[in-house]
Amino acid sequence: MARVFSGIQPSGDLHLGNFLGAVRNWVRVQDEHDAVYCIVDLHALTLRPDASELRAATLRLAQTLIAIGIDPEHSILFVQGHVPEHAELSWLMECTASFGELNRMTQFKDKSGRTDFISAGLFSYPALQAADILLYDTDLVPVGDDQRQHIELTRDIAERFNNRYGDTFVVPEHVIPPAGARVMDLQDPTAKMSKSEGEAPGTVWMLDDVGKIEKKFRRAITDSDGEVRYDPEAKPGVSNLLSILGAATDREPAAVAADYEQYGPLKSDAADAVISALEPIQKRFADLVADPAETERVLARGAERAREIASATNDRARAAVGLLPRSSSPRS
Ligand code: TYM
Image (cartoon, rainbow, N blue to C red; front, side, top):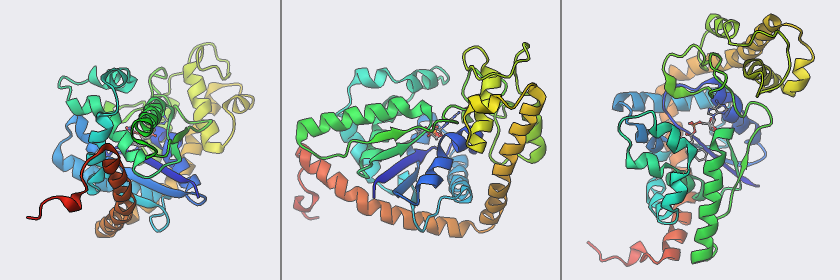
């Protein structure tokens, strides 16, 4: 069975973009693949979150992922910081990636422009992401469109490492969904929907109630020509609504457009489709929140299973670059 790996940051609650662009597809592929899903708490540290918020967000994210349908009996669900091989292999990745490559990452340019303290970790972030993926001999990485460049860099790093030191890593491929890969902000459809913008009216959160979701779609920015047509360049707001409705109902956005003559019904149908996808998830989430110890047990078991795979790959990489095996270090 092909191995699937993906990750998500515990930097606040999930939004509709995370769901349609990534996590929904994690659920869809888990039965036919050997799936490993990771909550990347070490990546979240690059932007200095408050410690107690990070702890709470990590557990809530695990509960949200299980509520969406990740089955931890079958798939491996774990927290990155529980498996020390991620941080360790990250160093080998930093020594394999070049400064120029990391400097070309558009996410670094975006994020460094929005913070006054630019940590070195924010710069080397994609090296840790490469370690995440390569530790699990990953074939496929289901992500939204904004991660494309990071996965391409992971491939380049894997190939360079294999050329330098001999075949060590599987070279992975990204899987980007045909609809929903780039969900845009409902108030600013030229910017992608994102977690880091605070209480934004253009972001639909997974845990928003029905009233909020309806209001956000009703107020979504469109344009003044009144024509329902899928054209992301000329009509970003309308096209975003068509993409969301298309992704939520598994149809092509351009085909969805043919059903509508006015913006009002398109907005309310998009809201309804999102509500019917989210309501059952919100119910399951409420049950899981009532028993945090159960989720903690799931994560502990996930980390054990992840570590079995990760430690073998990490040992292989350490040996390949010439680090002495740990068993030969002097005994204390
Ligand atoms: P993160 O936490 O920002 O996002 C998690 C996933 O959600 C997707 N996504 C979107 N998809 C569509 N429209 C949007 N507006 C939108 N916003 C986010 C992202 O593409 C992603 O798939 N660096 C990664 C986390 C990571 C990772 C990994 C991913 C760390 N290690 C290894 C894959 C493999 C990130 O910050 O995702």
